[in-house]
Image (tube, rainbow, N blue to C red; front, side, top):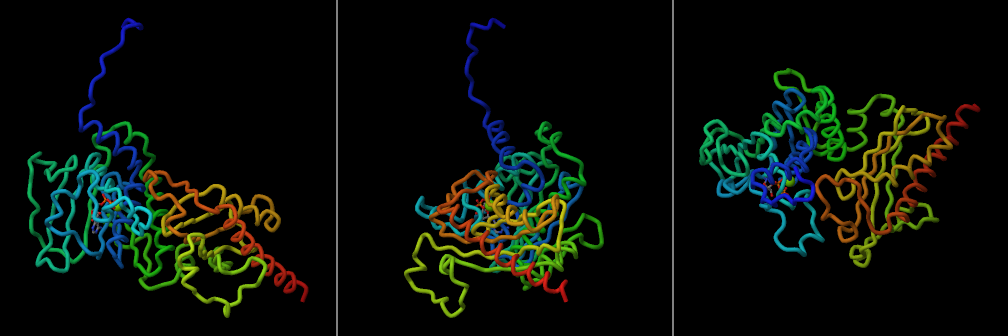
Length: 376
Ligand code: ADP
Ligand code: MG
């Protein structure tokens, strides 16, 4: 090829564009599962059951008892940018659902075989629909096929089969099935900890007993105790704090009066943390961070909280920390790409410092009482 001669510019085929875009949203079975769990939570489910075959590459199924999907919505369900959660731009700043971009199911239909069984409480039977490349197309026949009536409970079951069957580079980037399964379990574990009222089950297809199972109507510390090692469970401390508690004053229950002013204050926030005492010495920090109920990452926050333990834990030992932070939706940019998990928000530094202080105080109290115990 002559280097000085420009090549002609061509428009990419629609199907190729969609496949590339889908691969950017769905990296691996665990990222598909995160989207599916969030959809079930958005649908108000109180029970979420995950079934996995071959690390989710062969099959990933999630069954919920949420609102279901109206039959009339099924034709556009897997089209890109179709959502029931957002209609105007101003909705974005007060978004309380996980989803709003309408990209997850569409993406899955471009890189996997997607089928949906769903029933609303109004429906007399469930409806089954299969999707290929965003449309109601049966992957076996390649023909358009209308949803078919079938038996089913209220709620939605979504099945993803043969993930990345048509994107070999994505497929080859995946690790072993056991590694992918471990990542799936990790996602379910974290959402189960953060949603203790909801019953979660995660199991391998064909296996009798689930790897993970949580009851409904539990509490976060109980769920942590159930899902993490005993050594963590035994050493769990908790703090709750908010922008209303003054930094220098001890948290006084009597002062906890909700005024309308504070409710409307865009800088108000609340935090709840469950973290291990110095008696627990893990190999690597386990940090679960939820901001406005989204599982996110913040390396700054992680570093700030780890730093508290530096003086307390022996070298090389690491804590477990679960932190749920709620801030005004207006002070965090939610319009981020689905895969962009590292977040930034208003007053990040000040809030982090307040939380770190609270943890430090609790830990200091803890080590004093321990020293005291050892003396006697
Ligand atoms: P988003 O969540 O951003 O709206 P998705 O592609 O994840 O986009 O889902 C598209 C739409 O499908 C949702 O807005 C919702 O109306 C519907 N949906 C998806 N999963 C479920 C579910 N488990 N239960 C009820 N409705 C669902
Ligand atoms: Mg979604």
